[in-house]
Image (cartoon, rainbow, N blue to C red; front, side):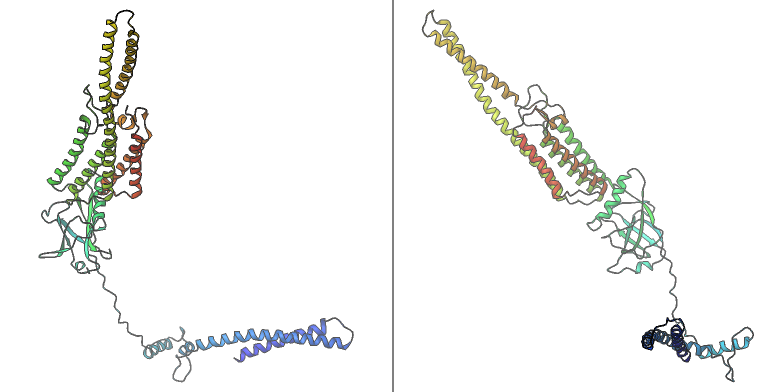
Length: 488
């Protein structure tokens, strides 16, 4: 403390000496003692201000040093505990090893180190998979939905970690299978059994597995199987690999065959019968009529949705729910076909009515012309009625020609001969129609998306309202143009 106060006084003295030397040695001369006195007073005030500011900064530094000395005092006291019996401190150097040893012993005796009662947790070895196999086929390397598989571990400690909120369960290719409970195996404390089921809780996980299976169809792809807690915090190591069977039994193969047969039968009947053709009287030449766009669209969605239902049921063994979007698609197809059929029927009714009327008028005109011809032939020369008979004959002949032309046009409104599926559904009498092309294009787009969801995720795609409205607008546009459309 004394040292710091002495330093402060030295600073003050140095400043005063500096300023007075400046005054008496380097200051310019000014006339009169009053100016010298005034300048001296100003310089004294400036010196006082500068000394005050420096002393303040020095005082702050002194206070900081005092605080540091107080904090370091206990350390210095402990460093001086190496004093001998006479009170002299013995330096801890290589020249005085005895003092070093004595000080170490004294320090150990006076300040014993606290005992550390905390023990390191024991190192546990993660459980490992020993074997995985179907319950009814221990040597099988395949498994399928509906099987019960048994998983055996080398240590049962992992099996006891499950809680109601974080249960023990089955992992297939890293996906936890919700809805499949872990059940104990009698007389096997290190084993668990799982009954593989397809439920709403694990639908997404199974869809991913079967989607990869279908994308690699024909390749013997393995599925990694292990067990662990649902949150993945504790999972058995060395997962076992088995092959997932696509169609587990003969019943599944039969259902898949039925779905394929349905699609093939619909195609064959539509090709060789009038099931998908425009309505109208059969052609007299034996040829089939044109394909109906509405009926073809209805058949496409019907066969696709039924095939998807049977296909998913064959693979999973569970009847899948039919999505709302699939129902709307069938409704749009049925509504378009029904509207087109009604329009065709109205056209056919109008055509039939006109045909009956024109045919009757044709026969009447033919008889009238024949009667007039006989009367004209029987009339003597100069008969005053001869000119009138000839005028009536000419008028009847002209009307008969008009009726024959109308009859020819009416018969042309009957079902036209088919030119092939693509040509029939895209063209009318004027060629390719845009309203037909529009509905065909959007139908194909949604159909491809539906099939990609079926074979990629094993689910029926549920289209949103905007997509379904788009197809509905296309169907309504087609029906509106069909009111005045003439088939080629």
